Image 1: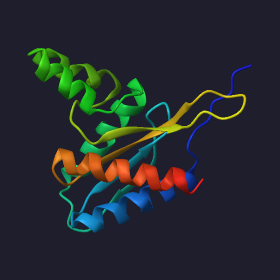
Image 2: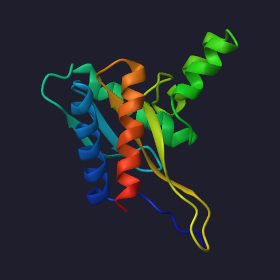
Image 3: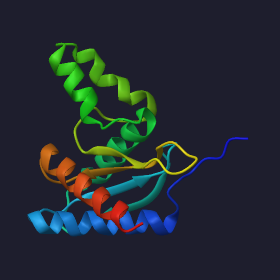
Image 4: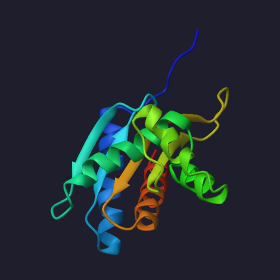
Length: 146
C-alpha cells in the first residue's frame, strides 16, 4: 500500500502566510502559490501592489518544483550552462516555468519514512533571486513550526 503525504489547506495557509511575512521583511509585494505534490493549487495569494501576471508566474514556478521535485532554478541553470535554450521549455510539460522562485517542500526523513515532497511553493513579484530567497525563508519557518 502506498500513501501520499500532501500539504493540506491549513498547512498551505501557514506556508503562504510565512511567505507574505518574508516578502514584507525585504520590502516587496508578491504572488504566492502553494501546490500539492501533483501541482494542483491549494492556496493562492496576491499581495496588494503585485503585478497581475505574478499570479500565473507563481503557479507555474510552483508546478515546476512539484512536478520535478527540484527548484525551478535548476532548469534555468541547465539551459544557460549548456547553452541549450530548448531546455527552458521542459517545465512546460507540467504547466511550469524555468525561472527561479519555485521550491519543493520536503518533509525531512523521520522514523520509518524517507524524506518526502509534500508540495511546492512558487513566489513572484521581486527579482527571481528575491523570489527564491523569500520562498526559502518561508519554507524554513514553516518546517520549524511543525
